[in-house]
Image (cartoon, rainbow, N blue to C red; front, top):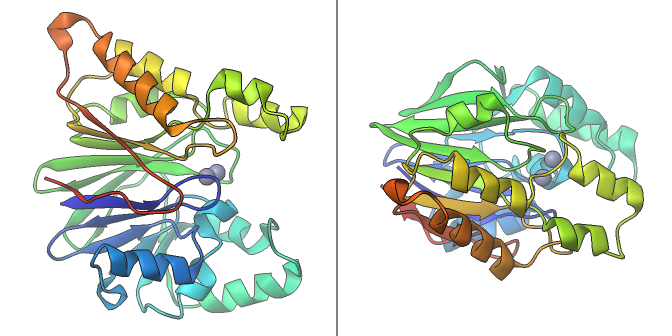
Length: 276
Ligand SMILES: [Zn+2]
Ligand SMILES: [Zn+2]
């Protein structure tokens, strides 16, 4: 199994998880054109795509879906609550009613209904979804399993619950949000007080500090790769996010030193493939 984060951030998220037989796109938050361009860049033919999974309806995870579906003929794995919210999500859409109709048409006969806490399988990859705290209808993270390799992906979550921490144990790679620096967010002049409260809430986005706390004190050290995702372009700095994660790993008790590589994802370009 291998993965690449095609793009991640508040402007759009998409991850590719592939085996020899199965190719799955997780979220479609970049424009259709950009998703196709980046898939070509990492050497995946869109005709070979087996499925698209939508984790939640926020536009940075689903806004490219409708147009992208014209270029591929695979099914969309989505929960009922997320599907319903997808039809009415307004952000960046001028005419909500006509967009809703277009979205319904695009998804007609293309849906595989999933539940955010019931395992499902696509080709030779098993998916173990689990609910995460976020201000969307039914957001989930998941562990993808193939041939004993476990890869976790969770991009939007306000805090690390007991369930999330449990699911992250024994994973070989983890793609996880490192959204903002708390100080940078507080000082950011471009965000309203309300928006800052939304981001910092337990159903908002995970901070560098939250992630560091978990890396030092609770991460089991199993993952060889941790990919930092969904970095805020206004309230974070890539080198700061990386430094904080690396420092947090070094602060683990010496008995539990981890051989873990930190990779940054970008909003503008795909990461290198991470393979197992
Ligand atoms: Zn979200
Ligand atoms: Zn997001």
